[in-house]
Amino acid sequence: MRKGSFFMTLVLSALILTALSGCGYNTMQKNEEAVKAAWGDVEAAYQRRNDLIPNLVEVVKAYAKHERETLTAVTEARAKVGAMQVPKNIIDNPKAFSQFQEAQAGMSSALSRLMVVVERYPDLKANQNFLDLQHQLEGTENRINVARTRYNKAVEVFNTSIRVFPNNLTNNFLLHLSLKEPFKAEAGAAKAPQVKF
Image (cartoon, rainbow, N blue to C red):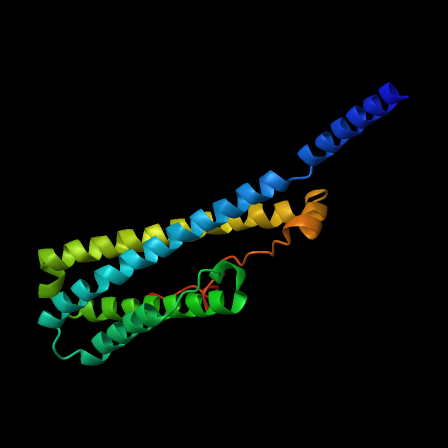
């Protein structure tokens, strides 16, 4: 009988190990880490933009002394973004995530107004320092877009991995991971901008 119970224990252990290997525990952990890494890339891209803005504003100030309102709006938007306390669990907190997204949208709007001001100053557009900063800012905006897209993809993979069977059982009983918030389009993004000459 001892041999029979040993054999049953061995078979039962093999079945449990097989079941655990298909439960998705490690996959969900890996996917959550991918979301965190992608979020770090988003933060780094936004930080790069935030670091460039004071230089851009100073160059424009030298040429556009009459445009204080727009320059003040850019400075205030940057201050708002800089003062925002981004909690470590922002990707698990829909309210904080939404506030972060709103602050960044305000920064994008202020920068758009700044570029309109630049159009009024031909000397500024020809200034090499401004051109370099403008290219850096354009590159940064592209990086932000790429980082946000990669983050959304990582969120999609993660959210799917915790919702599909049998992973959802593992998550419900062991991990208790929550869905992550993806970036959404800014208000008014569905409407195409009008170009007037």
